[in-house]
Length: 323
Image 1 (tube, rainbow, N blue to C red):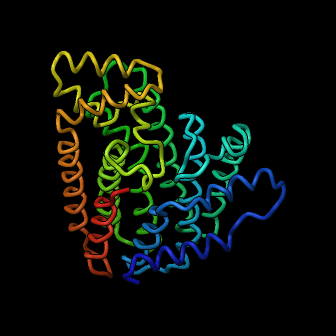
Image 2: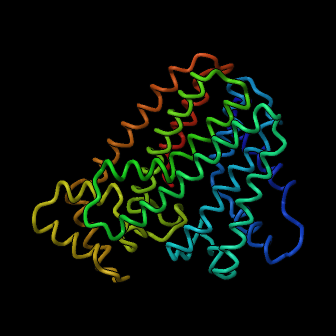
Image 3: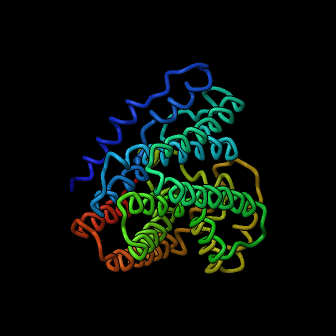
């Protein structure tokens, strides 16, 4: 199965098959709503692709791929509440469509379902996969807390930011690779290399997301344009701008990032500073760096059953996206 769309088709068929129909409807309807909003389905595709990559049984990886997607969407439901986000994938967020209480409770149920979908794994893999899953889950929570801290933290270093996005975003992508490899009985060395491939790919992915928040096509991105600026999120764009700006620009950035306003002047002013400093080019260089590190880890893998170009293609498509 070398065509990535085949993994997506396999996942989509099984997602439809496992749609939640039980009662109470008000608990499960918001779950089905967010799961049917679409998205790239990157993490479940990664799980299936990696299992196949190492010659494993794809059927054994289906429920774990669903578990990873469930967990990811649980985090999105709660993140959207914390961010007060009106849109997710171009559609109304769960807490806006239903209520905040519904989004919290349905998110909790989705987290529990994620763990239940690991229960069919053979006993020798179940404990290991659960441990890997739980390690990623706590990293995601820690990463989210760091992200919240940064909103009021006076200065955020690039090192701190990169750790945060590894925890919040990269760890789950890396875990999807790792779980697929473990299910396929890959060697410990290959499991470590494929995890590091996913970790660095996840960092590059989030840096690209930061870039697209400001420079992407808002109709394609499916989120509020410059939402990170509105929310005073100290992303890599802000951090690089603060490093490179002159005194006047620093003062202006500090003023706007301490301002709780939806004033369009805020977006216009911050974007003008980013443009003057060519921040887009600087961030593109960082994306290329982490993509290169990811590929170096990939080329250390020894026991794969498929051509490395399959994952290289996945990497290139993911980082080269425009939305």
